[in-house]
Structures are given as structure tokens and as C-alpha cells.
Image (tube, rainbow, N blue to C red; front, side, top):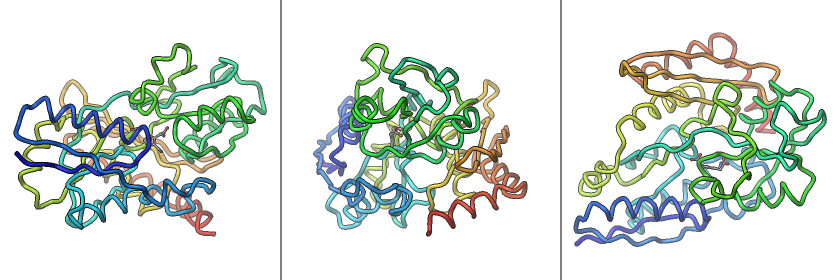
Length: 312
Ligand SMILES: NCc1[nH]cc(CCC(=O)O)c1CC(=O)O
């Protein structure tokens, strides 16, 4: 019997995702037991600044990775979209389980959909990807930053000066909020709001040399999800370089077995949107190809400008 220690942030979503993975692993009936170790990250302590200004998504991940190097924990369950496109040395994604709903959920206080909101309505999000796409279809709306975990954002939407907020459907679904009837006003289709790279999928990280654990994790890997997400991450890897920028990427598997990847780069005000679709057999190759095409078309200048503004 091996005891596997799983590091998790304390948030409801992180804990729920970690427990879900433990359930999947327990169902295999193999000689392993699992223990959760809570890790408080810097990202959880900084609440009042735009996330992109304090070091981006990597912030949540780094301290968990340190605990893994130190042997304090053996693995961690991440929302795939929070994982930087390049893994830290010595660590790997051991499994990508089946993806849940990748879409963004639009929640308005009045019950009006995105295209129905009156001009000047305030939409809360702290994602440049969401703001770019909302403003592209509704330039007459106002975006205001909103931070905090899912429960905090839902409370702020009701109590503070917001008319609507946008959250990932996956997060709402995992913590059980979608059971609440009429909470979600509208699920935004990927044509309106292309999801973040990896949205709705989990990535389970462990040490690259932990062959025993890698063998176990492979049993809950979902090859189709792993394949489509790898196309999205290959795109992210080629365009980016760490910063939190207005980028979206969503890939699906076609019936003929090919991967169809749609990728987006925009300016935060939604005035410039680059969007491309590419179909191919090799996910890494198509991710790279679509990224290079968009960078050459002018996406590079847009991204450089956003990064320069974030650095100020
Ligand atoms: N940025 C935080 C974050 N990271 C993962 C999810 C939701 C779950 C997922 O997309 O897998 C969320 C919340 C949100 O964006 O609304």
C-alpha cells in the first residue's frame, strides 16, 4: 500500500477537484491511499490587485510545485487553464481526465442575455480574454474588474454595482452551483466567447521520475481530451511567454479523428480580434502553425502592447 500525498489549494473549487480525482483513483481498487495536504499560495493572499499584474496565473502553481520538488507532496490537481504552457523542469502532467463544459457562463442580475443588456451595463470579469470578446460584440458595455473565488464573485455580482458577470461553466458545475435553477443566464457559445486554453479540463501534475505514480495516473487519463488540450497549449506556448494576455483556444476532435483548433488573440478593448481555425492530425504541429500564422498577421504587435501595459 502506497500513500500518495496530494497538494491542494484551500478554495472550494480546488478541494472539490482534488476530491473528484481521489474518487476516480479509488474506483480503480488498487493498493494506494490518498491524503490531501492544504497549501496556501501567495495568489490566494493577494486579492485586491488585477491578477495579471501580480505575476499571472503561475503564482498559484509555483508554491505547489515547490512542495512537489521538496517531496512534501507527490501530486497536485490543477485547472488546466491555470497551468503555464511550459511545465517546470522535473515535473510533468501525468493525466488529463475527461473535460467538462468548456464554455463561459454569463450570469446577469436581470436575466437578460449578453446581447439584450441595456447600453452602459457593467459586466464584471478579470479576464482580458473575456473583456476583449464581450466588447467585440457589445462595445457599448462597460467592463469592471472583479476578483475572488466563484462564491465571492457571485455575491459581489448581487451586492455590488455589477449587472452581470462571466465565470467558467466548469467551475460552477464542479462546485454544484449549476444545480441552482436559473443561476446561469446563458452559456456563451465558443463563436461568441472562445474559452481559455484548457478551460474545463484538469491537469494532474507529478514528478517526472515518479514512474509508479505516472502508471497509476495514466489510468484516469482521457486520451481525446489530452490530445485536444495539447493543441491548445501548443498554440499558447508559441504565442505567449508567461503573461496573462487576451488569448483563447479551443480544440475539438472531429469524426475523422483530426483535431480542429480555433485560436484567438485580441486587444483588451475588443477592437482588434485575430481568430483562426486549423484542422490537422498532429496537435502540437497545428497549435504551432496557427500561432505563427496569427503572429505574422499582426497578433504579435497586439500582444507586445498588452504585455508592455501590464509591466507598467
Ligand atoms: N481563473 C480561475 C479559474 N480557474 C479555473 C476555473 C474554472 C474551471 C475551469 O475552467 O476548468 C476558474 C474560474 C473561472 O474562470 O471562472
